[in-house]
Length: 355
Image (cartoon, rainbow, N blue to C red; front, side):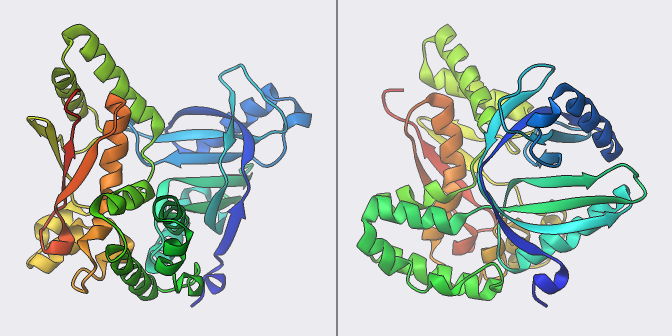
């Protein structure tokens, strides 16, 4: 069944000026009141579209949801807890929920499962356009799966590092893919592209290309690491002790998962499994690796020979965190990977000598 037959639409959204407020949402029914208060604070002529809510997946919030809610606007609006920013352009898969507000979760399931079945990767938030919340028993909300545009990033970084001719050769066959392509087709093309990259680039070039394709870790959380590092460096005068302060902070903060550890000038970071319960219950190494893997393209094809080079993409997650924390370039190596038969992925972050 096609996405269209499922009621799912692919949209390309332009960058949009928005006025928003960020808060912890307890119950979804609270959104209508938030929008009503914002509509009173924003001049009616400045509102340029229906209200929306962004639900952030990576958050320090333990109870409730980390939400940014607001309106598209045609000019800058500030004050009353409202700020204005440019919401970047994005590609989304959209499915409209019509019915009780507490049924939204049930509508999300086919949207996300269809995206993953086609090997599409979500960015670290989803978006809801709230067309009608006047009656919680009968509402209309457009749910948007925000696509992490890996292919565009891969193309752009190939061009930047290797040049246009090499980029075109490595991207050969990509035009046959679209949002309707099955995950098998997406895996087959990706496997071939990475093999062509292996034959065309040095190890550092491969790292530089693929690590820049990773999900963008939320900037506000990276900035918190930078503040911890800078404050500790000022007190101790020692970059490595400041790194240790960051590691201690990460252990206490729910955003970061398993705490990395440092040996000399190298930090080792191990990814937690995607599905911890399935990981623990797995009866075979294959089941364990499948439960560990986050990538919908790789997860179903772990035994089909993807080059471990592909995991430089995941190294970019660590790269952004640590380059943001210390304000210096780092090199990240893949120590363990599911693609080599390990049951988890581990990365070595090499700190500069003159930290």
